[in-house]
Length: 430
Image (cartoon, rainbow, N blue to C red; front, side, top):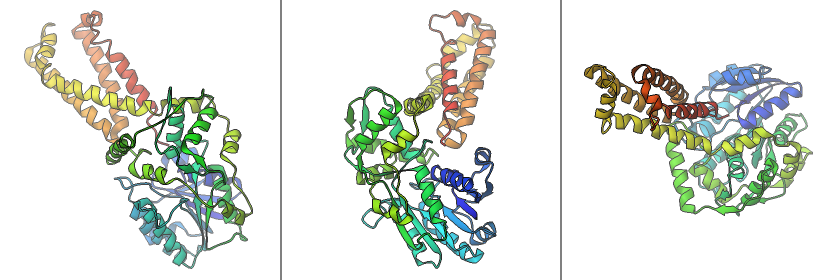
């Protein structure tokens, strides 16, 4: 079969695409930013399309000669990069029309366990509307509602859980008694493959979860053991601290940073992730338990590095932002005269020295502001490395004696540069 997988480079979509390709299907990978995805999965026929924007005509053209569609695209919360209504409702509506126009009969739609009218978040409301649109269509639709998806690759909520498991000294948790049912990403991909078989049940909604419900505390503890780390005490964070963190993460989302610690994720944790374990039997199959998933994918040093560095990454970025912003502000205010004096002491013209100090301070501030805007963060970090090299070279020429200064004004720039290098190497989201 020729199968279009929408959101094919996402956490779920990448496993679904890999499974379908391994089964011998011709897979059309669809996404809005496909350059890196094409390098990671070169066997797929990659096409660029944004579910929240693409027209019915564009989808109809893209779906020519396609036998089935798997929709793995989705978003957690509104932000400049994501529009829940556009992706979950309007985009799915246009996709349904395009399938009908292109003659595509079978569509497998990935939703989420627990979606229902009793949950009031925009995520749940829009997911529910997309399911209703499919139910009203004439397509052979199958809605899959996976629980918490655990994968060998780390992204989103499961990446956060690994970070909590790798936290030094204690495992901080909020809503630690909330119950969560899981499914492996590879198992979910198997379920999608079964849904594409001619004999699969259609026009059905199926929860995909293992029957064992784990508390969040238990889940983090098992992940810590999987990482090979010694057991530590779980610390229940005050709800007010969790809400402040979520609010700050919501604000950062408008700067392009999609943290899994946003308000919607917190609310999902509070409500738990539950589903009907018996639904999987309708596909003649059963998902593995969480312990079985961990046993099948032994952790290595890369998992421990990731878990331990998870919270270090935002700390490093925050430190760099404060360092460069304050350096620039101090250089323009209380430190202006002293900085000019340092340069004029070497014989530099006073006007030139003032220009160098003011110009350098403005560059520092600009780099700090570029760092907090996610699309320009990588360029900002690269700029910090280049500017630091420029400072060190300039200092060596103009005031070489500062290398031996007991306060180390030049030497201290070296660890700051390596901090920027560390941030640059861990900047990728997926």
